[in-house]
Amino acid sequence: MPKMIVSIDGVVIKEVQLTKDRTTLGRRPYNDIVIDNLAVSGEHAVMQMSGMDVFLEDLNSTNGTYVNGKAIKKQQLQNGDSVEIGKYKIKFVHEGAMDSHEKTTVINAGAVVDVAEPLGNAAIKVMSGTAAGREVPLVKVVTTIGKPGVAVAAITRRPHGYVVALVEGTQKPTINGSPIGTDATNLHNGDLLELAGTKMQFVQH
Image 1 (cartoon, rainbow, N blue to C red):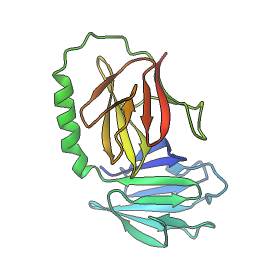
Image 2 (image 1 turned 180 degrees about the horizontal axis):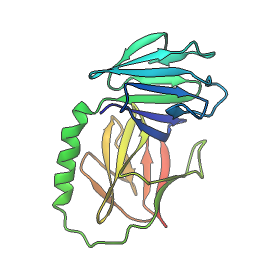
Image 3 (image 1 turned 180 degrees about the vertical axis):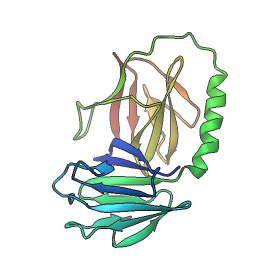
């Protein structure tokens, strides 16, 4: 299922699955994807799904809609495309290629016998950059973090705790200084992550 990953300054702020034929994006609260920023028009753009294809159309917005740095009126989105609206970057991900990877990771990680620990509330605390001090709560089963095109990691909630794995990118993220790859790595309270030049800490409350 295709999805849009919204980020600003390299920090992912929301992830939206495209489940409807028509998904609207804009500043006003009735849009499917709301970006509350003055650079974004009230009704800025719309994503239209036709079968497996997704088309992005600019709704005559004030500041325009850009795909991979070029202003567009209407364009079909490809997996990995970067949509730019103001300071916000929205990565378009078409899950087709990801599904097999996800299943493999789950099977591998499922074979690890771990002592069950109460999960509690967990979050990623940003330690560096413009968003330093911000906590991103891990409320979903899978939360993606990072900078599309550089390095993106996925933090997955499992029955025994949280794990992190590299999804894409040329720079390997590190956990407490050790590089992590596409195999799931267990996270513990206080672990320090570095991803695409941003330092973060995994905290369980």
